[in-house]
Length: 436
Image (cartoon, rainbow, N blue to C red):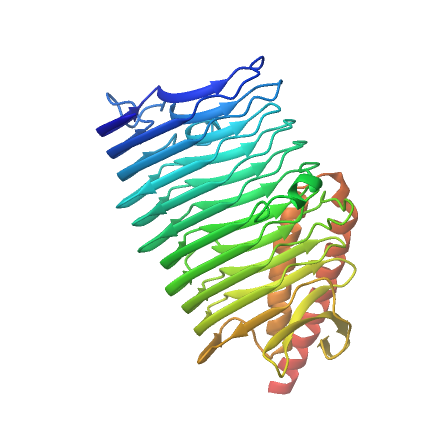
C-alpha cells in the first residue's frame, strides 16, 4: 500500500491474519507513505469511548501457517491509543502476534522524522497464551521517538507458550523519551522453548537502544524479565550524549528473574545483563538501574561506560538476589568493580566486611572522569538501614502480588523488617544519648 497521508481511525484496521485451519503463510502488510496516523478516538467525540485502530499481521493457524511481516516506511508516524487498559486489546495498534503453531511476523518501522506514541499506543509482537509458535523481532529506525501516557513496545512469550519472544532493536538519530511508558520483553510462567532459543542467532528477549539521548520520566522503564524456562533478555543502551533516569514513579532500567522461573537443561533463568554506554548517566529521584533475582538464580551484571555518572536524590544502581541472605550489597574493588557480598545484622549495626559473594551480579563502572553519589547511599548505619528497608518493602509489595508460593519468602521479609525496625530504634536511642 502506498499513499501520501494514511489514516487508520476509530474502528478501522489494515490486517492480514491466517485462520486456524490455514496451512499456508499469511501475506504481509507493507505501507509506504508520507505520514501515518493511527487514532483510536471517535472523530465525532474524541473524549468518549474509543474504538479499535490497528495495523496487524498474525497467525491463528493450528496447522503451522506463519504470519506475514508488518513493514512500514513513512515520513512521520503518530499513534493515539485506547487510553485505558480496560477493554483494550493486545491486537490493537501495530501488532504481529501468533496464537497458533505458526511463527509471528516481524515488525519493521522506518520513520524519517518524528515517531510519536501516546494514550496507550502500542506495538506488540508476541507468542500468545498456550501457542506453539515463536514471537518475532521489532525493529524501529526513526528521527526521534516519544512514548507517553502508558504507551508501550513489547515482545513476549506469554503464559504456557511454547514459543519464544523476539528482540527489540531501536535506532534513533536524535532523542528517545519514555514518559510513563515502557519498552519490554518478557517470558511468562511456564513459557519459552530453551532448545530453539539456544539456536537463535542474536538470542531472544533482548533490547538494544541506540540514540543521541535517552530519557526515562514519570514511571518510564526499560525492562526484560522472566518467569519461565528462559533467562531474561539483556538490555544494551548506546546514547552518545546522555542517559537520564529521573522524576517521580520510580523510572528504571531493569532485568529480573521472578518467582516461577525454571531451570531447564543448561538454561538457568537469571536476570539479563545491562550495559550502558553514554557521555553522562544520571539516576535520581528514587529511580534505579537494577538486575534482580528472586530465589536461587543468578542476577545479571551491570556495566556502565560513561565519562560522568551521577547517582543522586535516592537514585540507585543495584544488583540484588532475594534468597537466604538478608540482602546483597556492593563494595568497590581496586580494579573498579563493585562486588556483591552478603549483608548481615550484628548488634552494632550492619556488617558488610565479610561474607561470600552471593547470587547478585557484578557492577562495573568504566572510563569515568567523574562519579557523584549524593543522597543515594550513606556511611551512616541508620541511613543505610533505611535504604535497605525501603528496598525490602518494595520487594515485599511485589511478593504479595505473586501466588501462594511466596508465603515463605513473605514471612522471611516480615521477620527481617522487624529486625531492622528494632535495630534502627536502638541506633536512634544511642544517637540521642550521644547528643546529650
